[in-house]
Length: 202
View 1 (cartoon, rainbow, N blue to C red):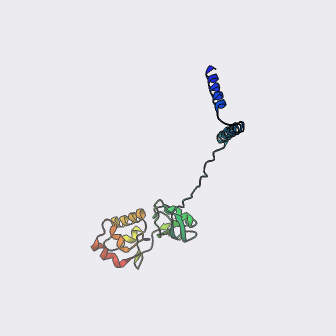
View 2: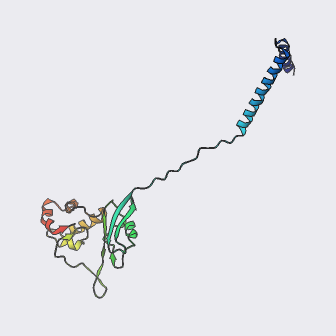
């Protein structure tokens, strides 16, 4: 308490010794009071004002798309746009699902699709009694993307083992792009490929 009394006495002594007229002292008091009042208002408003966070802008990233041609035993053959990393089963569903009598056993439904490829769904062949039979023997060049293991086995120099490898490779990696891709299958070298080249097609 004594400390504040000393401060007050010091301010009073300074005020009376100030070489100002009464009008100047009043003006000084008015200005000081105004400054203090403005300072209080600024502090109060600064503490009560709400701080709004900047708006969050959500940017939607569109996944890349691929085009797939679905044909054969499906309900709605055609070219479809799918998202990247789609699988064969997604393409077949986009084409209205497989048609009655479709044979999906030769297709790897879980394989990831590549842009621009064609998915061909074979039809199961049945006889007059409704019993499933093998494909009839083909007279012309066989389509290596649609041929069965029996079809490949009918080629000169291709036995049942290599025929099975061809079908397994196609099922795992997708359709062949060129007939030369057949050489990627184990057991088909340059000489064997030259032997069957005229009997195969895409």
